[in-house]
Structures are given as C-alpha cells and as structure tokens.
Length: 439
Image 1 (cartoon, rainbow, N blue to C red):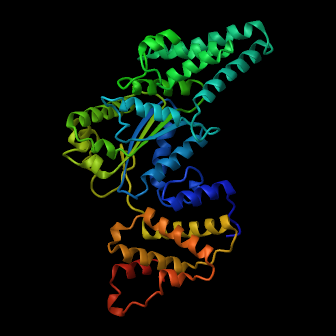
Image 2 (image 1 turned 180 degrees about the vertical axis):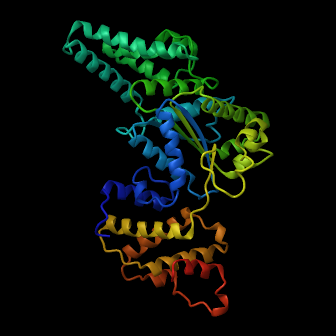
Image 3 (image 1 turned 60 degrees about the vertical axis):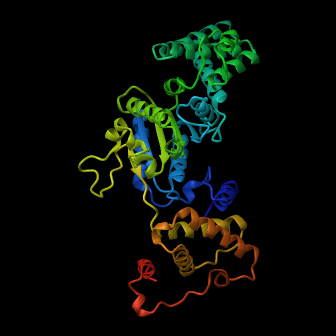
C-alpha cells in the first residue's frame, strides 16, 4: 500500500467515477485487470494504422462486461502513442445516417471530442491546426535561415500548406477540405479571427446551408448527413500527413442502431457501417481506426442485428475454424467475456488500496474479507453469470466510503458474518469459487 504512488488528480477521478458507476477518463491503467489479449490485438491494429493502414473492430459484450472500459483504455494508450482520437456514444439523436441530421450530429460529437496527448479532454481541433502552422513556420525558418519577421516566410509557409492541401484534392471532397484549411491559414496570417472561426465552424460541421458557406468561405459544399464519413477519412489522412500516427474513432452504444424501429432506417445505418468496414479492410482509408462497442444482440440477432444485413453477416461471422470455442482476436469482432472471479478479486484489491491512498488511511480489509464480499455479491444476485464488474465495483466503493466515514462500523456489521458451509454443500458453485483462492 505504501508503495502505491498515484497523483491525487487521478485518484480523485477514479474514486468519483467508479462511485458513480461510470468509466474514468484517466488512471485506468491502475485498475486494469484481464483483457491483455484484447488490448494486444488492438495495439497491433494501431501499429498498422501508424504505417498508413486502417482498422475496424467491433467490441461486443453484455452490459457490464467492460466494453466502455476497454474502449477508454485503448483511447488513452492511443493518445500516449501520438494518435489523435475522438469518441462518441450513439443515441436516438446520434446515428451513422438519419433523415433528421443524426449522422451529422455524430460527426459534430466526434469533432468536439477530438483529443490529443496534450489536449486529452477534447476540443483539440484548433490546437492541431495551430501546431501544424507553427511547425511549418519553424521548418521554413530553419531551412531558409530566416527570422519570424522575414517577408518570404509567409509565402514559403503558404506554399507548403497548399502542398499538403493538394494531396487532399485527389480524394472525395478533398478540394473543398483543402480550400478551408488554406482559408484558416489566411485568417491566421491576417490576424482575422472571424475568418479563422468561419473555417473552424465549417470543419466542425456547423454550417447549415451551402449558401452560408459560399458567402463566408467561398466553398459551395458543407459537411452533412450524407458525406460526414468521407470527411473523417480526409481528417485521418491530413492528421497523418502533419506528424500524428493517425486518427482513431471510438463509437460506443452501437445497440442504439439495433433499437431503430424503422427497418429502412436501420438498414441504412448498417449500410453505412458496411461502407466503413469495406473501406478499412480494402485499403480505401488510410491512417484510420474505427472501434465500435455494442452488445452481442446488436451484432448477432438475425432479425434486427448486424447479422440481419447479409452483406455484414457474411463478413463478420466466424469462419469454419473460428467458432469452435477458441478465442480469435485477429478478426473484426472482439467478444468480451465477463471478468472471472479471480480477476474481479484482483480489481477489489486495487480499489481498496486506491481508496486508502486517496483518503490517507491504512487499508485494513483482508483478503478473506474481500472474498467474503464476493461471496455475498454472488449469493445476492442468485446466479453466477449475472455478476458484472460494474455492479460489484459500485457496491464495493459504497462499502469503502461507509467504512471510512463511520469508523465505529465494522465490515462484518455491514456485509454479515461469514458462515461455515456444511460438508454436503462443498460442491456448491460458491465453494468452488472459494477453493479457487485456497481459502
């Protein structure tokens, strides 16, 4: 316990988030248990993306199995490795496509959450553009041996900006994307904040009409429900060209697509998902990773899930040798199992020590008490398979808070005395669990 060293900012985020039953944004490495093969698989995908490739992964698992946790920990790993990341939860208002701007709403959410290692909480769009321009200016000054006030500096930088932009022009919507980037540079050069803000608004998908965009920026298109994903591919290429490893999109709550009642609308969303899958698998996208979280039902239901769309089912279903109970982490689906009792127990040990560190006391709960807490959790739910890490963690944090705030209260008073099982009950599932820890 005394060796545990975690900044107060992180312990605060961990304690507050876990108490509320949500995934923390930071500090996850201190509570991560299990999931090593899954993480290693995605890290290999990230290496491919950094080399100019692309990746698509569906992270599936029952509610409480740790999908959001895995997406978040990969998000943090990615930022540490110099990727740009963006995340969004799907909802009735945010889909991949929709008749009421739901696809554009997803794009806006992703852009507002654009994050880097130095801006991990989102809002990194302007910082990325500023960093790009500054790096170009520094490169020109170094190569030409001139100072920041040299008259030729602006012209040289502008040529390099158009050089990067010209590479975009060969892509779908690339010309307009490049033109807006150049407009942002002009706003920067002329110290015209209005022009810069108009360019940022366009890049964030905030222009409502083409007329408005043409008047403000001289471009006749806007980012909308139909084309937003094309612009994500452009962003990935641009981000890779200016020194980052690539762009990773983390889209959670895929079950909201499954819940769409209108079959035509649901199929349209699955068609967009198929486009994303094909682009990343066939090399039509570069430096782009797409990671989508959802329940097994969202994927496997033959009536309304992804498997109801034959073109997706044929691509996602396990092959002849991949469905024999053997885990395969190289395919497009990573199916998460619930954490084992042993892994949850390790997690409780970590939480016990982090709680004690955060509040400045000596952790007193013993290993046997932690196992007893687990025993009570399993018994209360009545079915072993219903035990999820999320439920156990929330109850355990509640227990730790109560014990800390009420020193006169004992663990046994709150959880109950541990009873000795009769010999004939030794085959009971819980007894097997206790035997797993030699207790």
